[in-house]
Length: 435
Image (cartoon, rainbow, N blue to C red; front, side, top):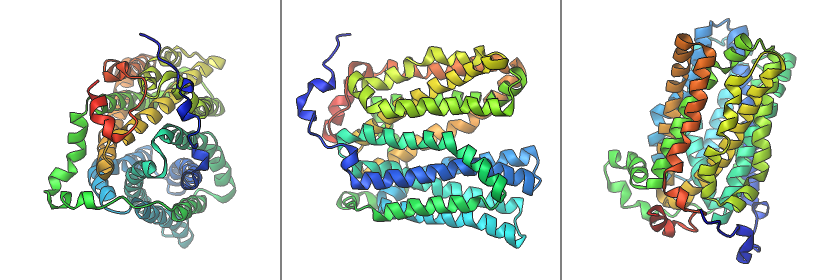
């Protein structure tokens, strides 16, 4: 393949403003960093609250994960329609305030002596519903806050917040639970969602023009709900991205459902060593997240999509090759490679989708992607457990990591392989997609 000029050779881009000059983006970023930290703290507090305070069984605790993901299957498509019809910033603020109230209800119910497993299930399900609405609007709002050339950098910084939360959130959560107890820790979550709501309120962004929606609102509801899927199916690159993400999610969740069991039973790792492994994984995402803009500029903002999926694959094999003792750190290296991959891939793929999708239907397209990609998650988890039961943990893990790497085929054998950079504007999207 002929090497094309790197982006630094294009002097007209030198004077483009960076995301650091965008007040609106910095507010969004700071609010989401707080929310991500709160989310990671709750990921520790929720199961501990169920196990220690409510004396739940293993199966009852596992239902919490199912209820957290269930709203993605049930309401993603209508959430996309809602996000396209209302002011997305106000919708996100309402979701944050709703989640804050739900999180605060847990310690208050505990203090009042009325906390029960059914109450916890209800809070998790309702919070998950608000999270779906928030995430659809969140992914659709970013292009209104940044210029097109800033999207890759903006998405990278938001992804870094997720990795930072994953790195320090569980540790902070463990300390808070030890000091305050599992129930009172949710006061911290309430504060995190309040910070997010305040930063969103401070953002000043023009609402999307509603003139383009007038004709759409007269069409059948079913047509509008499925329009995002129809748009993706007609777009060869978006279709390849969706298949790649879904395949990756399926196998990643399959391996994720057995990874702790593998490390504890096959590798005889202690709990603190398991924690070190996951910290190594988060560090990989943080390091690459800080370099994403530079890497994308050097490789090409479109080319990086398939390169990010193909290149780290050999390191995934470190996970099933891990051995007892310090050899368990090989697993961490494999996880770090995947964490780096997901940052580069997700940032570039999301930026592409935001560029080529018309603004008035971006919510529905994002919702369709979430509905299908996240719909694969519970199926992957079940498959991982079934494979481990039938073939053993290490053999199942080999299948899972090879399956994860195989997701790269969808984008390698797609029009992306003939492109260097993302299209400059939505107007250029149809011609670009035909490459």
